[in-house]
Length: 160
Image (cartoon, rainbow, N blue to C red; front, side, top):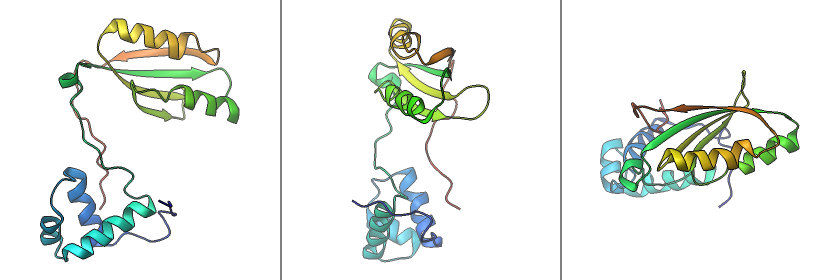
């Protein structure tokens, strides 16, 4: 599937209404989405396909409760890089692309990266921290923040 420039074609009110619905639950039958946005099922299907092709919709996934699958600990890690050349940053991004890392952001400010991880135990995190940060020659320092509670978690983007 070819990804096009998402800014090339603005989203209209129907696209935004569809996005609001499918972000909450993408298993809702298209006929029900169509009823709620006042379009035909075929029109909704075409719009969703177009938004996927343009890269507006990037994935259709199931959101899993980490505790239910034995990964109850959420950890946020701030990482300062020694070198920030393009090659060094790309290497760090690739190094952080492991299953335990749910999210990784290259950021401005005092640190270079902020990562969100889920782990089964602090022992698992200790081994992961050693592998990802302590043994990485480009990591100057890292700071670990353990979440006490997952107050609000989501990836839904307001589309209006």
